[in-house]
Image (tube, rainbow over all chains, first blue to last red; front, side, top):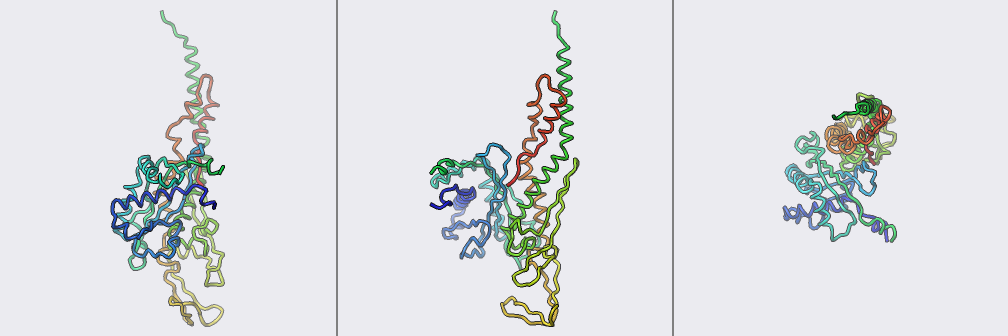
Length: 173
Length: 220
């Protein structure tokens, strides 16, 4: 069994899955256009492989910051950096959707836990909050230059606290 | 008739006053150390924020990294210096020279970060021969004896993007996302009440004041 099958998955994966499912609930046609692919790519767009995303919005994410304010080590705090790449109208709509869906502290954490129960990821979320670090409309001139860059880049931070459920079971396997 | 033994009360009050005075003095003497600790944590966080921003949007920040090392802390072409006093924390950002050759050049573009960030155009002239040879946009080799002006040497997205990312970090991310986590414990001065009991005075107060003003954890 490979290491990646044994260690718990990164928190971004269940969050992405939940977020995409909620977007699908709100706008099924939008999600249908992606033909079953969830457009969340770790670290860079090159992770999209041979799938060119062209004019469709996509997300690039990175595990940015792990903060350890608490000496109680099982509780982890992490900030995930999201970049939404989309045209102006999709940027506005999807940016609002991210905040609407994910910015809900322990309520959202419970929903993510419940939604991902079937996958048994081994992560229990305590809370999730979202804030935006770059604004779409007031972004730089370069980002708004339609001749060179048709897409806006809107950056979000998704902050979460969580713990892993089955660490001992994994290590003693 | 009811009587009060005021001698004990006076002693307790004096101890409390001395303890409180010590607590505030402890905070004051720790301020420079605290600001320095906080500055170092913010410096690490800022570097990580810029690295992460570069990884998720390389077209806008590739110029502040060595060729082929976008988002890699080891390939940074910027340095952050922290200067802290009891009154302020100052962060200085400097670009450093690139030492790695680009894939199409035999010499490093030393001022790569500075030139591309400022949006300066670059004029290339033949140096060791009369003719300039390079690969054109269409993949064909170009031979010319003229100067070649490159308007945006880093591409259209690099100009000013490092400054914008640093501003994002300090004006938005630091306030909303990081300081709250690091300074959460300062909202309530638990150390003040935890350290006070009968018989404690000024020295214990300074110790507790110093404990109170501590950066809460760090970033990885």
